[in-house]
Image 1 (cartoon, one colour):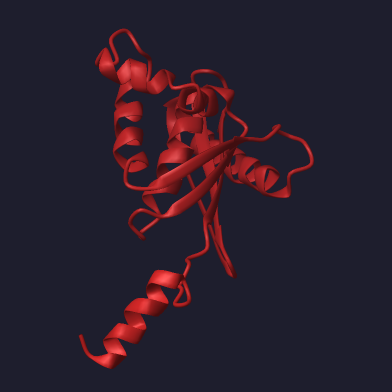
Image 2 (cartoon, rainbow, N blue to C red):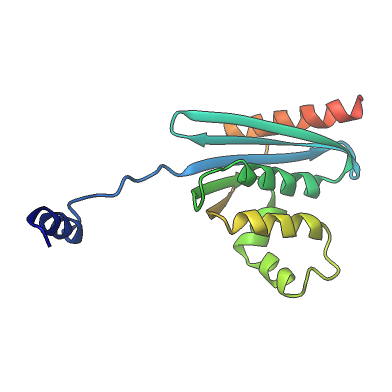
Length: 164
């Protein structure tokens, strides 16, 4: 081993040379439907350092749970960096508890038998496994500006579908 290589290896083993650490990505999500079922929409905000992006979309006939889950999927699919560290905030107990309490993994083992929204859960698991995701439940319609903005995006998308 050359002297330079030996010094580098020594520094790395002692932790002197640090690998560049990427910031975690924050994703905020919300879903809405005007009727259940009815026209619905989702809103997503992605933040990382100084970067900020809003996404939204709507469907003419859907449910609130489908829009909540769709928002999460769209947010995760928008992350291009593989194996990203993500903190995902949602006011949906349906989504957050399904992941944090492990229900979705049990449903998967049973091939989503008799489960609503199986198509979305399968899509979710595919993108979820590409990253390191931590789910955080936030109270909806409260004092979280990012969640409130997602709600505005979701409602606007749902209303746009209702009026088209």
